[in-house]
Length: 375
Image 1 (cartoon, rainbow, N blue to C red):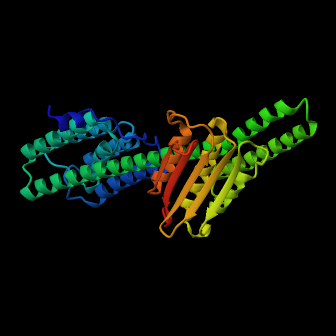
Image 2: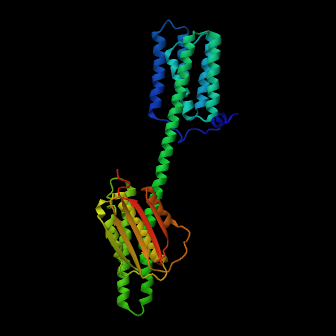
Image 3: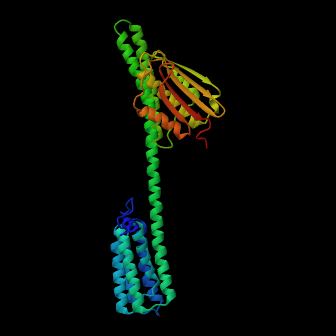
């Protein structure tokens, strides 16, 4: 077999799986039965009309299993219809026979590749046998082939469209999971790192300075409260659109990184330009990058006494720099934090770099377009 034919032959059944039964199936079954009987009663000129009416009524239940067993139902309909046509020596002339097209549509909409190939061959064989035995006119043959091809194409088109839609939704879910993972990492890691640092400081001074210990405990409580608030906000987003949402952090919120005064090293923020002129996605990304960079500096910067966060808002871009005065170290393998920072910047058309600085310590630099992500 050639590659396209083999690919079609090996194609699985349509996904997601079809519903087993819906209320429309019962309505369709009843309509076919009523139409077959009514047409046989109203068209006395049709030969063998009551035989065909009985056959159509007997075959109508195949519609109920057309999604789960599309090839089997179509094969039954073609075999019985062709056999009755040979016995009556004529082509069925009842319009109700057109409901066989529903079975053909179901085959190409839901069936596997093998089922489509073999089912299509059965349809061709049945058509050729009808042509040889009843000798219909050229217009009837061409018209019948055109209708069958159009029905099959419609089934394939809807199948492809639904499949593409399912893949798009899966891609959206993956992107949402990545975004949630970044937000959870940036938020939780920042606050938990601060709590860990405070706890270490408290352990060091617990025996000698009760007042300092009390201050550390207060700082831990404050960080824990902020963590809970942000976690509740994230859970609110996940629980549905009607939940109350926390405001999106902006550039001005970067000053809040100075709030944990008891933590070491201290954070100093400088904000130049108009923070309100940046788009909301850029402002939120800059805040999260700064938050993650400060967290990394507090966790990993050896001998650092201060962390400087500088934000410069220009007419064209927002430039963020986070620098600590610790010991310059070799670049470490990128973890979730560095990867998340780079992804945030790249999604908005910017860039983020991190590494040892010639001045000493470690520097994270991010450049974002000022109106990146704006609708």
